[in-house]
Image (cartoon, rainbow, N blue to C red; front, side, top):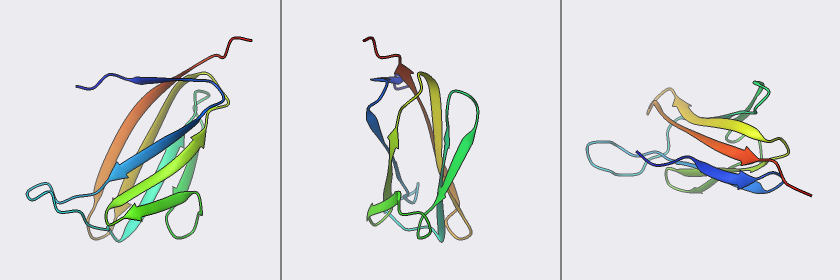
Length: 100
């Protein structure tokens, strides 16, 4: 299992996901792509590819979202698809308070 990434408060963190066929590893674009970000206070923001400019397609099956980290604590995000090609990718990261 990979460790949890840690960032300084105030940086922009690139959140990303890759959608592939598990049996073959072939990348594909699911019918609907969404990303949901949970901030330390527990609230969520959801983005939909094709509707929200912040959710970007880098290539077949590859997507990212650049997230500003203005709050210290535990952050979580999930990229997921609905319809044809349902899949999900979840991660957690820590933002530490910036010392001034």
